[in-house]
Structure formats: structure tokens, C-alpha cells
Length: 314
Ligand code: CDT
Image 1 (spheres, rainbow, N blue to C red):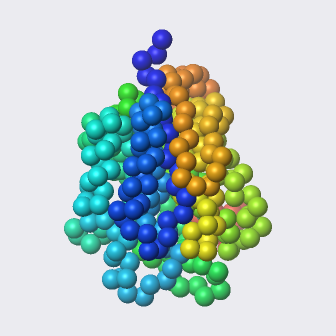
Image 2 (cartoon, rainbow, N blue to C red):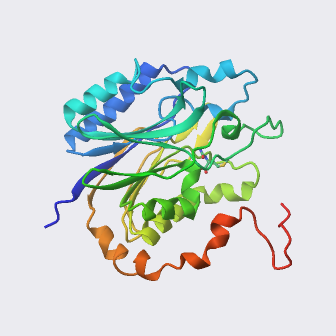
Image 3 (cartoon, helix red, strand yellow):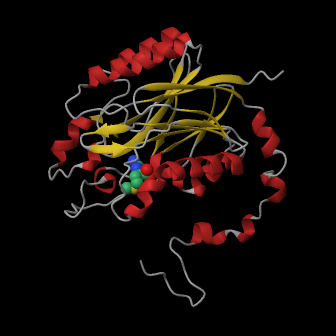
């Protein structure tokens, strides 16, 4: 019998309006935590930027206008209650928020908190999607590249009786994310997201948003012998409809639990982290089968170079 059994939950959130206070949002997070306690859950994963509305949808000329969306400390005056409640219940959690450092850097960040209340890990989003400048043709903006600095590595941590890594939203679309985490031993990958159902650069992708969401996370789980927990902030937020469909995926690549609504919802599953070894020790035995000496374009090159030696036009 494995001693690496873990009961986990995606703590999906419905919309957060622009004028909803931090205090009220934290109460919603605590509501999910209380439900998790009833279900004897060990770890609750909340979405990306779980404390505020998804503010990169608006263009603000002045930096001062976005300050109120950022946390200067963690825990801070409003989030301390969440930490206290989680520690009292002995439940760990993963929380996404906008981080302002003392040096003035701004990150799209996720932290991992163990069942005893210790912050054991912090991850800063590497792949920042969208654009830097105001683009008037769009129905709404996606200005993550304006408001955030990019993170620069994929750390992993020993926690929850296994090895845990984190990724944030757009990171989940890139296979490099999962592979870097799995090379750090990751067995459990925690991913929060805010994914608008309308993709302005190519609306033919709109109808495929749910398919692509599950496709990338299921592939990432299977190809790396990991469990993946993908957690949405879904529903209609400030006029923008976003994907829900939070889910928990096994190393088989199969979805073992999925959200039924686009609102606040706890999605629970039982994991046996030893199941990762079935894949990590066989078809995806990295040490035996990987050929890193043939993969140099992945780290030496950023864009495509065609056989004619040309860059691909976009
Ligand atoms: N938050 C985030 O990364 N969202 C992106 C939206 C598509 S790119 C504008 C995502 O990959 O889901």
C-alpha cells in the first residue's frame, strides 16, 4: 500500500468583479477551504490572480492605476485570514496573485503553502501572453506583457509527500514547461488559469478553447508521468466570458475529475503519487531514452528557421 496518497482539490472560482473587495474574495476562498475540510482534502489549488478581477483586460496609462491589484506582502492584511484558517484545518493550498516586490518588480505569481502554514514554494509566470501596448481593435485587452515582468525558471519542491511544481495559465500550452518541471522530478503540477473564450488574434480558436485546455494538460501529464491540477477562474467577469472546466489529470493522461459549473466549485480527486513511477520508469524513463544531444534547437533557438535558413514570417 502506497503511503503517498493525497486527496486534492481544484478550488475553482467564478467571476470576481472590479469592485469586489479583497476581504470578500478571501471569504470566498475560505468558503472553498471549509468545503475542502468537510471532504478531508489535503491540498486546495486556487486559480491564477485569484484575489482580484483579471485586470490585464484593461489599458491603464499610469502605473499607479494598477497598484491596487498587487500584493506587497504575502500573507498581507487581507490574506492572513486564509493562512490562519488553512493552518488551523491542516490543509495546504496554492494561490495565484499579482506580486509587487520591494524592488518594484511585478510578477504573476503562485505560491505553495504546506499543511503547517509554511510557504514552501513560489513560482513566477514565465510565458507572458498578449501584448505590451493598447490595441484599440480588440474587444478587450490582454496586457500581461505590459504589467508583468517574466519569471525565469521552473523550480520544484519536496512537499505533500512528493515533488511539486507550478505553472500559470499560458505556461500550460508550452511542452517545455512540463518537461523542465519533470526534469526537476515533478510528480504533481499545479496550474491556475484565466482563459477568455474569445481569442482576438484568431477567433476560429474560440470554439476549441475547452478542447485545447484539456489537450495540453493531458499531454503534459502523460508525457512526463505527472498528475496535473488545472484550475480556472471562469464565467462572465466584467463582460468577458472565461473558460471554466477545471480538472484533475492522472499520469495516464486521463481526466479523473472535472468541474460541472463555471462558478465557485471544489473539484476533488484522490491521487496515489506512486502511479507516476509507472510512466517515469517505463515509456518515459528520461535517463534511458531521452536524447538531449539532439535537442539543441530547443534552447539555442527561439523562432523557427526553415530549411532555407530563413526566419518564418508572422
Ligand atoms: N492568463 C493567460 O495566460 N491567458 C491566456 C489567454 C490566451 S493568450 C491572450 C491563456 O493561454 O489561456
